[in-house]
Length: 209
Length: 115
Image 1: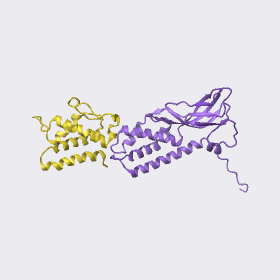
Image 2 (image 1 turned 45 degrees about the vertical axis):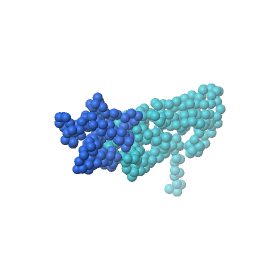
Image 3 (image 1 turned 30 degrees about the horizontal axis):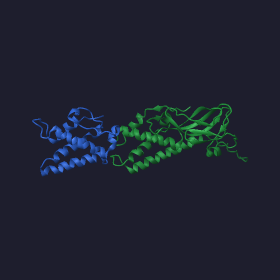
Image 4 (image 1 turned 30 degrees about the vertical axis):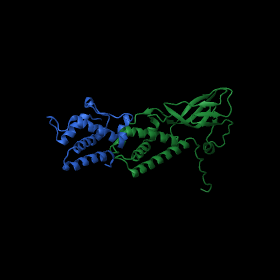
């Protein structure tokens, strides 16, 4: 299970304060929170399994916040018997080839699932859900902080350097750091997807070798 | 990290060479008025300095001179320079005009210019 607990990002704030001239700690934190939200939304990398139950006779499921984090995407879903249900066509194509299930869903809102039909009995579900801090949230989830420290640092630095009319305004450094941030997001996004795919088949050993 | 209006006014008096209260050449009231000009000016060009209280602007009065302002110490010098420049603007001597303008310009450049 991932850890979605909030951590105190003091170390990262001090790291940045020692680099950027004249910046205020509260401004660093503000940009850090924006960076965290941006990172989560772009990469879907802040994810965790959520156990939930679709009640009998109902076809809608609202996914509740976890530690103040809002569900933004259901990456995968399994029923209690292990059958996979799915929505994402990319995942279906790349990862779940060959698995046939009549159960499907779509998400009309980020934290709402609507299923094809309603179960006759309560249907326990294990959902892999991507989360993101809410817009008014001031927290940094532990998983992201531990695993994507450098990405968050680059994103925060980039946002600070791109502010106008500050002693630390620097378009070139802003672009450089935002580039690093985007690269970190891309890596995180790919890793988040890879965890949902099957491993490549072993390469066949050449007959003549 | 925060500084009080008293800190700024005392340092400004050092630069103005107005440290003897017999009475002061630049009264405390006039320096307070200058301070209350500096705060909105800083708020205008560096809103992030007032991040904690964006909706309200601090006002300096004789009653809160010893109360720390919600402003970061890094920018204390800028406020000192503004007070000195503003005070010297009122001196009716040509030789002081450049000095006053330099102080005022330095206030802006300390807040917004590259380091």
